[in-house]
Length: 310
Image (tube, rainbow, N blue to C red; front, side, top):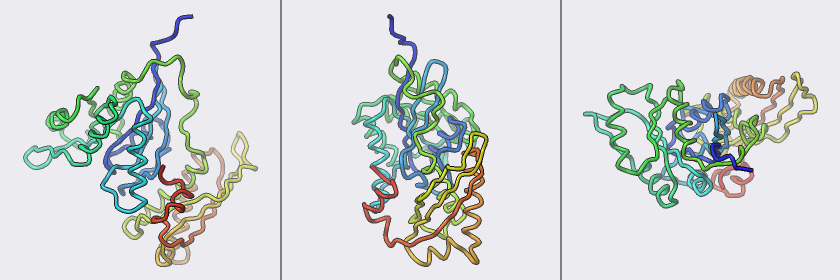
């Protein structure tokens, strides 16, 4: 029997600086809020697999933590996770932002050069994705393309907007063209992500902590789901009970997360619960507790327990 060589399937690593739009892009492609998104850099702490299907292809995309000059064990593990993904993929998608600086100048940053060097070292084909084209005049796209084109022999260069969805389909098709031939999809067509629902639940809570606290709370906050009870869940809805702990490093941080009379914790819980109910298709009883574990972000065993890093 002749093999089907017209179908393509493979793995893609989405790489870039913090806040370049990696998670927003993954969510737009999936049509679901799988990867949390906030205005703060380094929101993504682990790699997240999202599966996107098209006519004759399947993309298995890894959203990765933002690459930066890391200080401290937490950030170093995040960067190691991102760069380590390169060894497992068929194609790299390197994201940069549209727009020019004063006088129409484009500054190619040290971080992007570092990412490109890692891609070259592993001899991976790479697509350059120029995100946030909705925020930049069209005439500035050409200087951006020219500035980055000299860095690497890009397989494709695609300007797009992860926020509005403009050219996102074109980007997916460009990535698919460079995947290896496959006899069949790598994953079932109904699969969206490899993230367990309890992991997504923890991330939804952390997303709200980061969004609502903004500058008041440092990055040393993590969420651990200790109970995910689906015994009352049904196909047509039902109830899911979730018990989660928000870990911080100091008593002063605990007080901030709880808020006066529990007001901040209630806001975090309400917003996370509403998002979880949409995802799970069921009512959610969400119980949140705030606990202190001093310097957890500096200890490898704590990072492992919380699923952060390789």
